[in-house]
Each structure stands twice: as structure tokens, then as C-alpha cells.
Length: 244
Image (cartoon, one colour):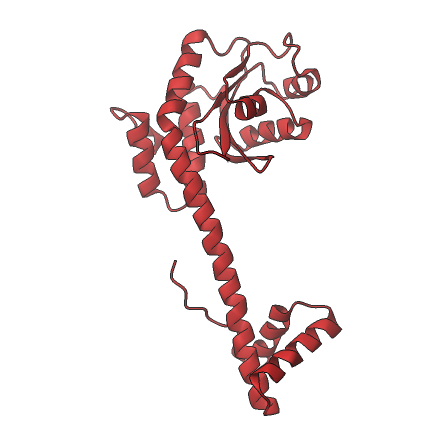
């Protein structure tokens, strides 16, 4: 998709991308690839990731490649570095040369072993309580001059709204997935209760108490026992009618 950006602003391109991609993860990874391939260069010497910080926990929500994600993970293991600083302090952080910068010696020594020579972290403008930064790794010393840094900052300003929307969609997607799982469990339990009521000629509450008793004695969750009851009479996995 990134090769269709000619003539489009980053905002237009990413808004179109949100509409065309099937899920949030696909959008975010395309976003990171777009950042690496269009914003900086097409040589493959620049890698990009997006760090999202929520509830004091950092994680990579997108990367231009598997190696870019690995580089982000190195920073998380050290619990400090330019991209985390950019994210937390909401300011651009530039490491022109990992061999001479003295701010994060252990981290920079580690990252240098992976071929990284310079790093740029640029924060996004998101909603309160959510912080994110674009992490850019170059395999060249001095990989980011003043012009490229200004370009990156302008790009991040333009694309912050698109990223904010994608984060909202991700949160909604998580909620829907959790709700679907809960509904699925509820369906299995309800069907199992009906089966037990028919087999034992007991009340709904008595049937549920039987499920809880078996769950406790076997040290398994009620929903798992319920699924076993349903499967035992050949119904297979229960269907849940739920519309996102």
C-alpha cells in the first residue's frame, strides 16, 4: 500500500489506510513500514517502531520489520533509552552516534551490537493517559540531520490523529474480543445447565450448583466443565450469536 502515497499527504494516506485495512494491527504495521520507507529512505537502512505507553507499561504496537521490534524490545529490557524518554517526557530525543553518546551507556552498548549507529525518538500527541513515540533506528552514524529530524516531527504531528484513532479502535477491539469470550462462556454454561436439568430433573439453581461442585472437585473452571458437558452429548462447541 505504501507505494500509493504519491500525491497524498501522510494524513490522507493513513486515513485511507484505516478504512482499507482489515484490523488495527495491520494498520499499525503498515504505518510503521510507511514511516520507514517513505519518511526516511527506501534503502532498508532505517527501521521504525511505535512504542505505546499505557499504565506505566511500554510495548511495541507496530514495527516496520521483525528486527525493528527486536530493537524496541532491547530498550524495554533496559527500561530506559531515547525512545522511552521521548515517550515519557514528550520531547524529541536524538542519538547521533551510539558509540559516543553517554546518556544510556548499557543500553547503547547493547544496541550497537545489533548494527544500530544512530537513533531518533519522536513523541506523538495523543489523549491524556496515553503516550506513544515513533522509534527510528539508522545503521549509519549521523543518520538523522536537522532537516530529517524536522521532517520526522512534522510527520508525527500530521499522523497523531490517525494513530489516536487506531489506538481507540484497538481498545474497542480488545473489549469486543473479551465480550465475545464472555458471551461464549455464558452460552456453554447455559446449555450445560439445561442438559443437567433435563438429566437430573432438577431446578436451574441446582443444576448450576452441580456445575460448581464438579468445577471445585476437579480444580477446573466452570466454563470448561460446561463445555465438557455440552461436548459429551454431541453438540460440539456451542454457538454464540453476537454482533460486533
